[in-house]
Length: 495
Image 1 (cartoon, rainbow, N blue to C red):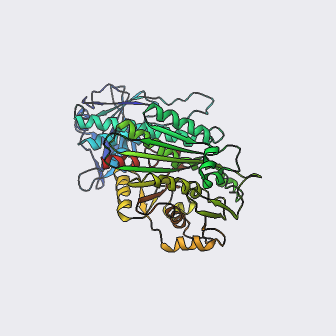
Image 2 (cartoon, rainbow, N blue to C red):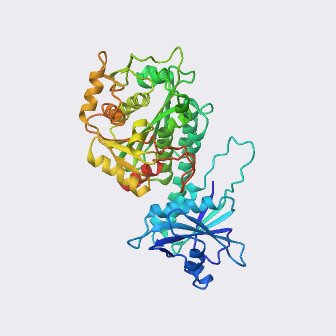
Image 3 (cartoon, rainbow, N blue to C red):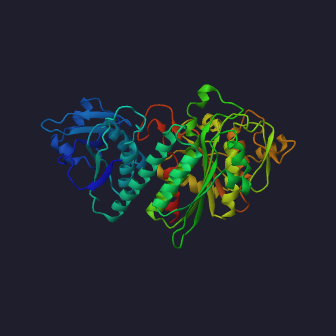
């Protein structure tokens, strides 16, 4: 992992391999934002002319490499897009830093001369640089040529207390995002429920978070029929991981619940071959809630957090759950399994009932739950469902502040009625039997397992949790670490 520091050094004179600076789109040309004055002076005030001659337009994410006569350092100009009100959004800066650090892929040192008028902007630049500087090479036969690199944010706020705190938070959050990406990218043959539990235990103990792991025997004794039912077809037994971070005098109590299907074949309702390729990522929700909890503990935020990661491997075998089997969930509710590929809601149902027993002020579950949500919102945006408008707005506001795209979706009351009526033998079915509204039906199912009086938000992250395409901004191919920043922001906003 790269290290990052703050410095008041001049952008034109800083000793580094690469200097990344921003270019704003202005009408039909480009303009230079704050932080580039010394660079412009080094070009006798003609840097805009030089950039225009190189074809720079200021379009967001555009990279222009600028020659530097007489210097070994490389200048990389990154388009920031238009700033119609004169102010850049923190997400613009985060993306620009990520683009810049990827463009400087093999550099040993990179400095960022991007606008940093306040501590939030410092954090955005630092986060973009750190999480943009990611690669997963654990299974490569040859050593990576990517340099870990020393990163520097050039800012007049280098000695400012708030800026230093912002840098620390960026580093901690980036560590968590990297860890989550590593877990999601690990082949499912090397990360079963038991192995993930070991990783979670190690991190929790390192940072003073209490941890409890229920194995298959404890799950059976406790009556966790959903988790056991999903995992019964695999030779790798399920787990329920509980993390508990309790600072002195917490201002609120948050509960996080994550879907942790370490590989989803669909069970006996088997997926297509192509549909299984990225199913190692079906534990991204569990990875995110564990990673965020550790980050919150490291930052010492005054918020109590209780986290549940419901882990199972969904496989077809002679012992697998069959369509029309009935599972008795934790808490006693019965579910007829009419599609074994609608398994995430089963493990989450158990965990939501258990989380409700802790009586938190808010439960947030994170799950790569439905392809239907991807159809509705695409691959970059998560769906946000909730049992109260206030709870949903609270989480969506945190996502906006963190720079993670999220969109509110409804839970129509008739969806739960359809789930109840679709089973003739159990309290409810795990699907409605209809081809439309799948994400809404899944949310309705989950909501039925949340205790009355507890605010709850469900995040369907099936699209943004895993990137099948090429890298962009600070987002790599593969696991993205989506929702870690939102959850940390949610806790920070409450403190």
